[in-house]
Image (cartoon, rainbow, N blue to C red):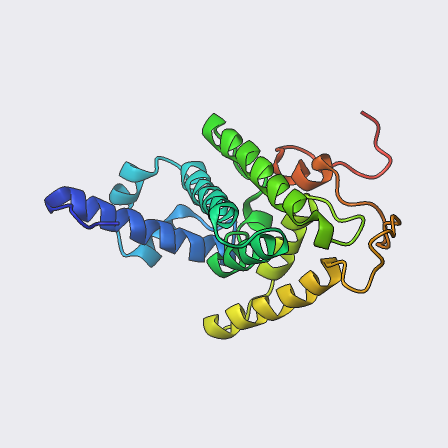
Length: 222
């Protein structure tokens, strides 16, 4: 946001916005792209880019931190809004999908070291998501857990076609399909069986990609 700023501060804010938007586009297309590609896309010199982001990791952290903050803001808005239970959860998921928060997750997870602030926001996101799921528990089919949400959002974010408007429409279409599968409609309220293939993701399964290092394999010890 550049409103209320003037002179060099306004220009710096405009550069920030241009760089981050360019970085998002560049790294969505190729997570291994050099920062020079970001500067070229943003229309700024390398010196201007490095003044704001000393290294590529700093840029990646900022992108993902901004996405995390947006996720938490949407969750807080859903919890504080007029809808409750299933309606709040459905509204939250739809708004996060529209905001395209998760597109970078599968691309950038594990490519940088999160800051303590990011870890704090991540814990907050887990708390907020848990409240939303618990509030909708009566409408959710048995076996659905809070860690399912991240995979649902990533599945929607993976949908991408050249037309941005059509991308948004298709993501909403398949979110509706997934939500229909998550809802209890048609099941007996006393049915305690999971009725889903396998248990919900564990916290380790949901978060392993954010740990830097070798990818664990099934059957590995330790």
